[in-house]
Image 1 (tube, rainbow, N blue to C red):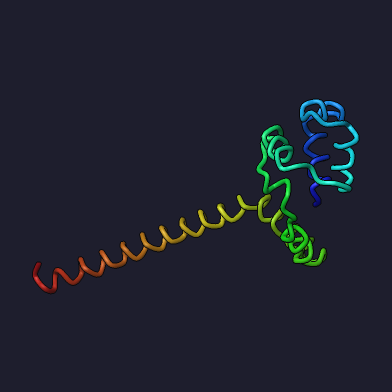
Image 2: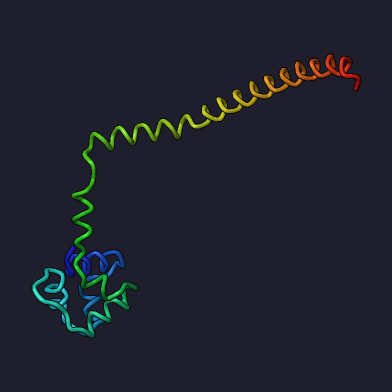
Length: 133
C-alpha cells in the first residue's frame, strides 16, 4: 500500500473531504489530490501533521509494507483452507460430544475401580482370617 492509498483510506475513514483536509493543513485541495495519487510527497511538517491528525505514526504513513505482499504469497491453497475450516467448524459444533465421551469414560472407570475395590476387599477379608489379623 502506497502513501497515497494510506492517506486516502485514512481521510475517508475520518469522513473528511480533500477540501477539509487541505484547509486543516493549510494547503490547496490539488496538493492533497496529488499526494493521494502519489504524484508528489508532502513536506516533512505536513507528514507529521497528518500523522497527528489521523492518530497514526509517520512510519505507518511513509514506510512500504513488504510483509503484506509476502503474507498474501504465503497463504495456503484454497483446497487446504477449505478442508481445515470445515474441520474446525465441525469440531466447534461437536465439541460437546467429546465432553460426553469423556464423562462416560470417567463413569466406566469409576465402576471398574469400585468392582476392583470390592474384589480386593473380599480377598483381604479372606486372607485376614488365615493370617490372624
